Image (cartoon, rainbow, N blue to C red; front, side, top):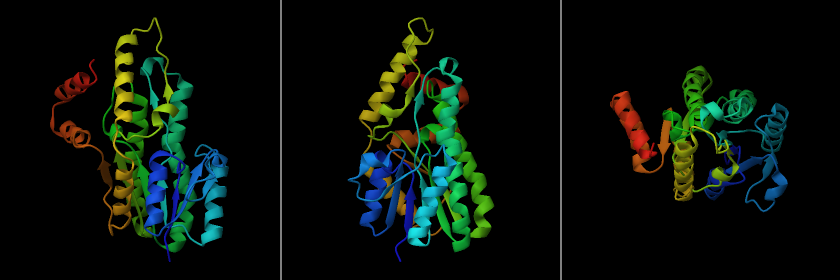
Length: 267
């Protein structure tokens, strides 16, 4: 029988590419969106789900299990970007980002675990970010939310071993998606002490997304994880230098690495 896959945020970008790729490989795929009516031409069903609303999560998970009798794979892909000086980022926006990028995935995981335990097997893939491995200037909240999910997965893996449920992270670099259009930008304030440096960094971040890699690279990487018998805890997907930046952080003194980042962002 074909494996059943749930992809949160499966209507656009990486989630859509992963879903379409897995369908070609014979999987049964369900995606989610807060507004599924906007994606009626999707190659796979798009169900209504908001990771910040537990009732929508439970309803969608139960719908899939009722229809298919099982749920083999969860891909926690739904996420939100956020940029801005931490000092000038409203607390409500900081909390909203963590609700989507951290607490949201936890809620979806909690919803699928009873079924996976019943099956005595399952795989959960959390889509994090290479930005979660380092504190990036003017992306500090995003780095923190994705980094938190990375660490959470490490703990979860050990807790779930006894139930034959695997969990892993896959951290993408910059990909050509619409994430820049949907993320929260703290406004460039005229009287802000960060105006010049934040403006430069914001332009650079948008350039990286516009010239990012093809999302199909993520689709191929996730498929390889799915067919791996014993997935590792962490995977990184992106251009060489993006992945190598994690290695540099591990081996370089803090101040040297900080200088490299500041030079990259022209600070």
